[in-house]
Length: 410
Image 1: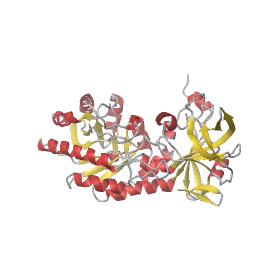
Image 2: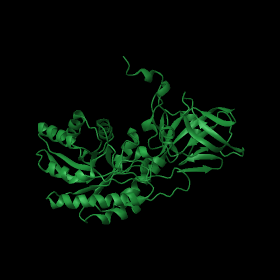
Image 3: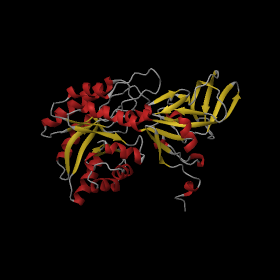
Image 4: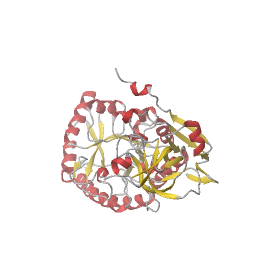
């Protein structure tokens, strides 16, 4: 929900220049109504099918955003004990919390069982043994599904492909039926579903459908062995439009392709993250200095790779734009940060106006894996986060101080 009003770029009805004055830069800014709109699209697409939409909170775990999503009916896809803790504190119903991840510790498993979460997505035979043993000691039954690796390779960055053969994720496809038959003999688990997740930032429905078709073969084989699977967990991974002109399928298109693959009595779980929060969040930054070096133009800003790691880690593209309209001539420039690394950049070779020192830029679509992956590298305090609702902007995480850098040191 970004648009210009006269010469000022606004998020919803609030000028970004006003946010810069009130909260300083760099800062993460989110649109409350964009988050709601994105979630409601999934909710509407699921319709009366049964099941729920679980927000992948690894994409953004700010408590206010989690509370917002819990309040409108979202479930939670979690990957650590800490994420379960955050979700419970934010008001998520434990019966809508699903716990995934390849390396669940005994302490995390015990905490999840005590919290009465809905289901574990199990990723190895030894994890099955661990959950069964811990549940037995606690005298409870753990609801489980197996994450199956369907050996589907979507067209996305290699670091965020998870359903390809040879990754660390899930039960190998050829061992899927064996996993269910092994679990059937366990006394302390209850088998309720099957799960797959093939990767992230996927812009084509075809890989999702292929994965679903392969999972359906496992479902049929498992149910022939007397094991009823109630829930089909299709994971997440639907991409967003980072670059203008990218075509992204919406949730209804995805579900219309996947629902017919399975029997009509099945319930579904989807675990979107980026496609709910990605385009609802942006990073507001300030130009500290301008320079030309070796024939190249640079805008040096107050945001570093510690604040937004995606361009450095994934070679990810984010649109960058001035927050005020200008007639200044556009030149090819590199938008970089203050970190002592050559990989510290927000964007390279961008056509941008050489706006004045102290002016502001917006790095768009940073709501997912932005603040969530930020760090204190170079002893730089973490950024504030601001939630905009109509004409109001509210601080939902304060800017960290130098004192905060030493908070847990002894």
